[in-house]
Amino acid sequence: MMTGSIWLPLGSLASIAMLVWFSYALGFRGRRTLSGDDELMALTRAYGGARDFVVDANRASAIAMLHDGRVFLCKVVGNAIVTRVYSKDEIASAADYRSKRDDVRGISLKFKAHGFPSLKLEVPGEVLPQWFEDLKRK
Amino acid sequence: MPDTPDWAKAPILAIAIFATIFFTIAEMLKTRRSNPGAYEYRDTAASLLMGFGSLVAGLIYAGAHLAIILGAYELRLFNIGWTWWALIICFFAVDLRYYISHRLAHEHRLWWASHVAHHSSQHFNLSTALRQSWTDLFGIGFWVGLPLYFIGFPPAMVILFTGITAAYQIWVHTEQVKTIGPLEWILNTASHHRVHHATNPQYIDSNHGGFLIIWDRMFGTFVAEDESDPCQYGITSNLGTFNLARIALHEWIAMGQDVRKAQSLRDAFWYVFGAPGWTPDGSRETSRTMKEKWAREKWACDSETIVPAE
Image (cartoon, rainbow over all chains, first blue to last red; front, side, top):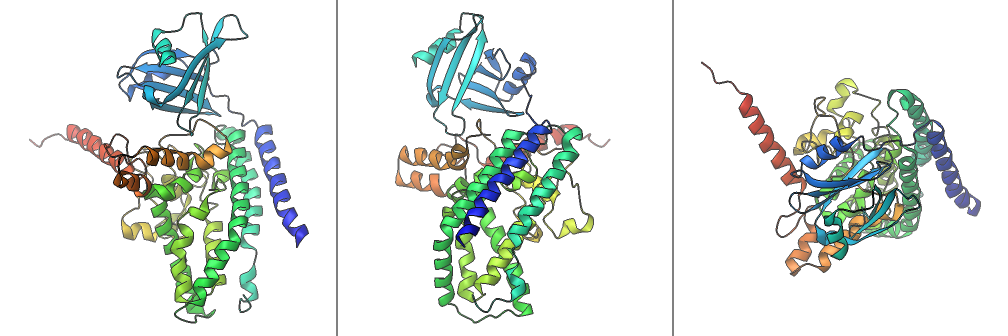
């Protein structure tokens, strides 16, 4: 009985490891990136469009300031794109930091929602937009 | 359960798990070239590990569930044995129970908080079938099933059909089967279940059936797959993480945060028992408001294209 109860979870975990390895080996590795500024603008259109945005140097995430003052977030998760629109009140913290790369600046946002907890970007250039500075001071 | 016939002791879920592993590999091989986006290894890992967590949680709950079941059966109204007519009625009753509990799980936040984990993948493949809740102790399915034991259906019979319904539903999580002909009228199929997992406004909160689709057709929740509106899978606010604890608990935490900031007991009640997305000021969308908006836009669009008769 005891042996059986051990084999069930062990067998399940071994099967899971085998299937995940198989999906990785077959090339299901999620190479999706944001194709360009046009794609980001198209994504924000449903929310009235963006007045400004910053895109990650690796095109894995982006933040846009919408015309109505809300913040549009875009993140590549696996091979899918996830977007959220938050008011400034729903942002827990915003910070910027020096990246290891000289040509980019790091941005980090944390949110109150547990289903979309954080977003990190490496933005080309030294100067960050004024609206991001405002988010940091919030 | 000494009166249970031997044939009813078949390890249905174990057979289903082995079949799922086999068909998952087959689906990966088939979609590898035709649809390289069908699987994603981290999404697959999250789905399978959610299934593992659900299995462990189920084993933990099993004792409590079994005690409640046997308690209810002790108070039974009738002594229903393993007769052919009891099997037929029990099959339909268990499937109707599944429809009711599944519909409640979509329409009320308390139970959606548990069920949302199953819908949280933006992919739709056989691994998605195993992405199950860890918090089913608080889910609605078990409680909706209790009247069957009070009536007097043998617990093993109800558990058998519950297992069959659960095992049947694994295969419907695929894009590889388009339709299965006239059986689409009666059975829950891959086509119907694709619609169920879609977030397109016209599809949302439809096709809750387990084995049979007849309940959706009877109670007005059936929506057919429309090739001109391809299914967009996931939830209306998709998750930005593969973290298992966040997948399992994010809606419970969000509900708790809403209840904490509620201005009145009435608001707190509706944050828990209202539709997912309910707010006192209507600032968030519910499935009903999304469907109404979609219908209005479609009506306006259709009206523009109508050419008045000469």
